[in-house]
Length: 393
Image (tube, rainbow, N blue to C red; front, side, top):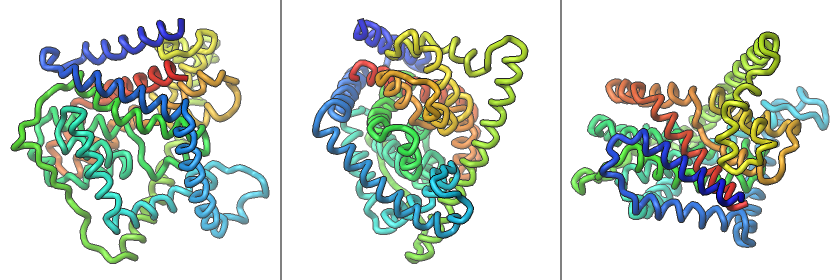
């Protein structure tokens, strides 16, 4: 029965993308089918095989060591502010982002990350039927982040038509920045974080290929990546450390605001209609959670967590999920967890359009105009990934 529900859910996701398509007649179904198959293959390997378990265990161990090193720096500065054996979200989860950001800067400076990103993008471009720029951008977004990635292609923004801008922005919203992956792994299981990152990479192309189909002409398919200005090693290191600290502070500020607002809205809803705002969202989105593979008796609670991510951000939803109040089954936990690993939420519309506008005002206005459609597509990517995982686990 679960396979029937999951397959129906898969068709519903693709149908919802098809309904919003700009050009239904020119959808390339072959690359879409290939990428769906690859999602199942990679998902199965990562979640159900010894090789996948070994890979994820080593990735988790690696991030664990990095977070331990980050903890040394954090404790040196803030150690006296925390009681022994007490957990503080800002200090334990957000501040290690500073160290991870510094590492990313070092790998960028030594040209290691640009090399990896470029050639993974080239391989993906052969699979997805899109341009090299789109493929590069998808991989780079998963490393650099949804706003920073546009700096690396800023020279090309002015020459890109609107349909290519949509794909670039959709990829950025469907992925997550490598600098905060370690923070995610402190709240949800590493295997779900890694699986979501890989599946979302393909999912972004699948949904964009349906919603926004087009063909890139060979003469337009030129990949010119704007390298960062020449800096000394320590200039670069200081810049990335400060960037990491800014990210930690911004996420912390957003959490304070969103958690407080949700608490207020929950109180108002409970006072007026007798159930909280999150439970109300749970009832509305529960059919979608059920089609993703969540058992019906858990669908409302699972949907409330998913909807929380949509209206606030993934950190707020992950905090809610990791609170231990839900007692979800392993399958539901897997589905909800992978759904949460992306930047698909309302605030990301402003973040991406603002980042693009800072580089090219005209293109920033274009992004703002299709902002809701961008969020629609990125949310379908998360639903698609969760549905695939629901069929695998």
